[in-house]
Image (cartoon, rainbow, N blue to C red; front, side, top):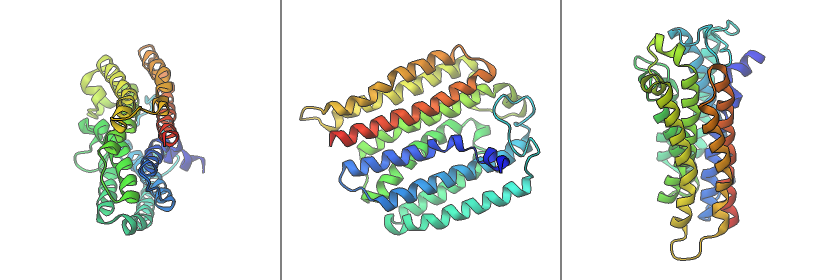
Length: 294
């Protein structure tokens, strides 16, 4: 059981659930919250994340990225705790379960949700699988931003409201930038094992220092966006003070950026965990501010 917990990487699940929470709160802000679609979206998001983690475990092992020199947590297949065949079977099962449960969201949200679901399944596999894996082409952060930000928030919002919102779209950038920062931290830590196997992540392409600067840019953008959106939501009346609640997370972002430039090697694991914490805390403050402002 411990091997399967290791393979599913439960510590990564907040990155998939938090955007769903934010999308649901944005739907509630517009008077269209629906509990059942919100819960279904959260479950499907977690299942897709687990499937992606399992597929990643297989293909990074095959390509040699998960070697004994890796500084992050051990990977189940590379460590010999689980076989490729077992992980593959479970990954397929999780994908099928996500697709089946997602049919409820298709029923309440329409064909657009089906398109999102199918695309998400494809990306879960293509991230490290296929002839040209996204992660090995340096596109990991782009797709983390899109699928853990824009797609997750907007898909959840659309399933409940059946409409598009520019405000919700820009809010979706917040978890998107945090998620990109989480992956970037992971890739900075793994530069020394990724480069030899041609896993040309953004961190490998930019180099260590420039990748750390990019992390700080992601962090700054995530923190600034809700502040700017506060004025967009209420352009003609006094802006509710609650919408500035996310500014309380600024010290966390500053500390993470400062610590990143001091950390080396395995020390980056704590920055990775800290960025996950920042995602959760900041997005929940954004959500709480929206609820209280209403």
